[in-house]
Image 1 (tube, rainbow over the protein chains, first blue to last red):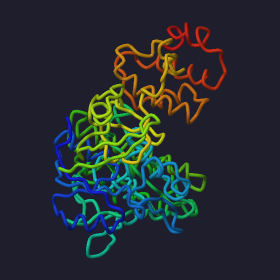
Image 2 (cartoon, chains in turn yellow, purple; image 1 turned 90 degrees about the vertical axis):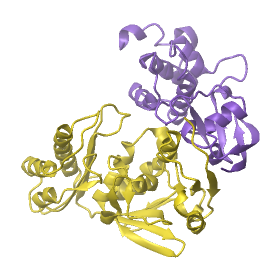
Image 3 (tube, rainbow over the protein chains, first blue to last red; image 1 turned 60 degrees about the horizontal axis):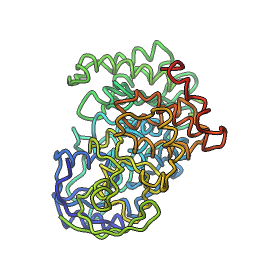
Image 4 (cartoon, chains in turn brown, cyan; image 1 turned 180 degrees about the vertical axis):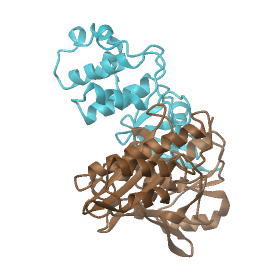
Length: 290
Length: 176
């Protein structure tokens, strides 16, 4: 099907986008790459009256290391972020998440920040962002604020953004030397949506894990942090015993929904297996190259 | 609803038009410019039939509005063979039976062209992974992979091309 009619506005800057959102109110949506929004419009599942295109706002483009982390602008395309040397050095989990998302032609057009702001709980980039940790930079007509990655996702396609606010960029906080990441998802075919995914980071000092982050996707209404699994990992030596126990804990207590791609019980098993394998991959990367 | 003047380059020629905001890029190409080589499949970005190159990069023209392409340089399947002779990629698809119904072919050709331009020495695995963005319900993909590899070889000058190309008669038995 074709999209319903709407009014299109092109913002030359973040401030102009915020002003347009203020002018048009709840009827306006931000258009970045459009790779989630436009299919929803073509399917008539979304019909915003007004789209504010931010991809030509020069101050929203770009991706790069800021010393303490990776800054990704709201107009930065997934494929350019995926291949950027600073992403590989500072946020390799994000690079791997992007590589698992969609197809190259979709990643040419789609944006990283757009995927995070879309907040699909099954999607790759929100989970990698939450696992690594960082901040969401937000602007509206009255000013700017920051939201911690931990507090950003509130439910299915629902974030802490208020009406009139747009995300201008995200920062992923760098993990120190001695860290490793793992990102794994399971899907029926390479092209289809992940049934369950795990994004993990660990830091090892003196043969012991002293920091761990475990986030699951596709099993709840948000990218889901698993504190019980993290508690098992911290203080343990990296290895099969700790990873199996942590994976077990990660899958304990979650109650994924069933759909045509898999039952809740199957998703739960996948969550355990994806977590164990992601932790194993993370351990192999500790201290070495990412 | 809003209407916008856009200026684009399509297959090397400048084009200007007034489009409704909701006009998809593929409908702009087909209905406003009469370039019906680009096909409309799923209209949700899944199948790849509508793939065109925008500023040299493959995009799904069904989940992009024409107004978003303002100022862009677009290449469609019509650009491949402006004269009587097929492009080496089209010739290889014909030679290897890399198409049957032909619905996916315009998108397949442009995605394949992008892959070969990016890496003229692409491996069978890279070709297979590369075209996984585009669905074909006829060929089972093997003959398309054969065609892409053969075209890449010919385009980089490795073979004389034509009937002696390596995969021509061996495809059935090798991996099929």
